[in-house]
Length: 179
Image (cartoon, rainbow, N blue to C red):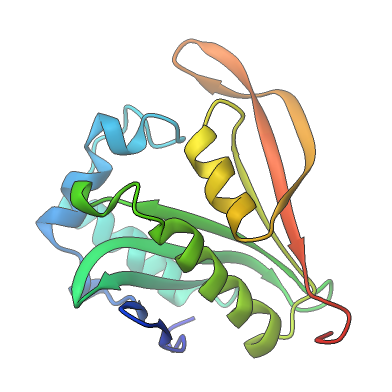
């Protein structure tokens, strides 16, 4: 979805992502073991070309939207809606806070809240969901602070660091007065 809305909350801005926004810093986040340790990206190696191809495919997809998370004008992470299903009125949400000095400052819940509010009001969805390794406490807390609850724990659902691990599926529903 090439033309996502710009979303704002004080000094935090979700600006539509474009292929030209892929920087070496962004690639470095995806290659940083600390950033991706608790994700399916752990162990993958990325280049400018591979990340640009990923962003381009996301932008071409009719069921996805992607934003840069900007803090005081600096790109510190990304948020993405995917699997947007207009029939069932649901979408998945993914988030990365890549810049080290932006982590553990409460930006994750704020970005999740902005994207979720857009999904409910702008896209008229009923449900937004997210999945994360059960061991990813920081991600779980960020989504909980944004009003998400664990709907299910999928047992031994993903292969991570030589073992099958559980995955929490979290969701937030559109309030009835907004539906």
